[in-house]
Length: 543
Image 1 (cartoon, rainbow, N blue to C red):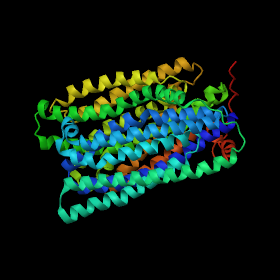
Image 2: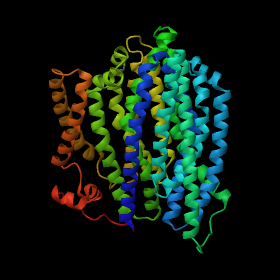
Image 3: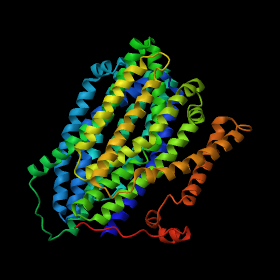
Image 4: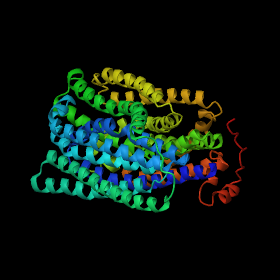
């Protein structure tokens, strides 16, 4: 049984990682054309709308999908399939109501909300994004249910549908408005309208998939015991678990929103910049944050797949699965995020020049912001995974307290640093790194108390950091040589491919991965023997 859970965790993470890769490529095809054809001031409206949307989204959906996933995963681990379905039924109508209220609040309150954010001209973009609030709420209930069943396919496919249609419709509308009316502000609204339509199509797919799943379940469960907890009890359990997670997640989205408001205020009233200049800086910082989010998002599938499987293992008191899943999830997180931090930092300038090819001045301003933000990639990634571990152990309040502490640090540093004219928007990047570092340290401290037998974090991270530094040195040397013949923005592409290859060789040479990590890949045991990796000792069971 432990082996099945372990495989389902890795397979689920692999499915979501593959879909994430495709979604992020499509996301670049959405955001990069916009960043190159819409001016920085209009892009600030786009990013402001997303910051505001993020707060509403977290308030309505952040904790509930996690709670649904955990409760469904636990119910299935204990053989209570009917209760899992009832959890979804209760959650669906709760999500429906919250999503509808959030949509109406965003649409009719767009003007005062945009004014509060310090960017009043973003109100139309906020209105255009409001329907997404409703669709995302419905999708969150459905995704949480399927993830609780360790079925990541519906989530992956719906993400791909969203991303594909967003590119076609969003970029199409923005391009049409630019070519026909030459209005950058309305082009940003058109792009966001495409986001809302794509969310509606993703929701339609998930609803159809759930109806099909209902028919299959009905045939398979004929004659089984249909006993389940009352709906009121399930609702209270759902809310009891969701509220702390929502509050914790709110801190991250609320921090982006507050940081945006602080940025606009301090740039004007502290550093002395005019409104137009402040909006342009906001747009540049938005580009840097967009690029910063790309590698870290590949870790989200790990935490998404981890929560229901680890929750089931904890509920079953299966220490073998608990030990394996937590250690493997942390190693996978670091294996992806540490080289991403190093690579993004050293190649920040050519990456910005490549992705913002039509705006070299904007790229030059975004590069140093991205270089500093990249230091937080592995911190942010570790935060996702450690939050999922703490939530799986039934400790959802701890991440809330830790993120609150990090939020105080971020707000204080942003207020002070952004107001210094020479630092300006860089203050937001610095405060992000400091706040994520504090949250990560506090999370790891709590996990050590719950799992004293867990391998040392530094012991796992240092070999990967060493491999990443070798990767960085070799790839940057190759990049420097290539710039003698190619432009920097073209030379960075083969340099990145070389970096991936060098890192893979270093990981094997330094024995960064274990036998258990490799053995769970397709034909992994043969590959592990080829690499001369030895099996580890068998973990103990709970008494």
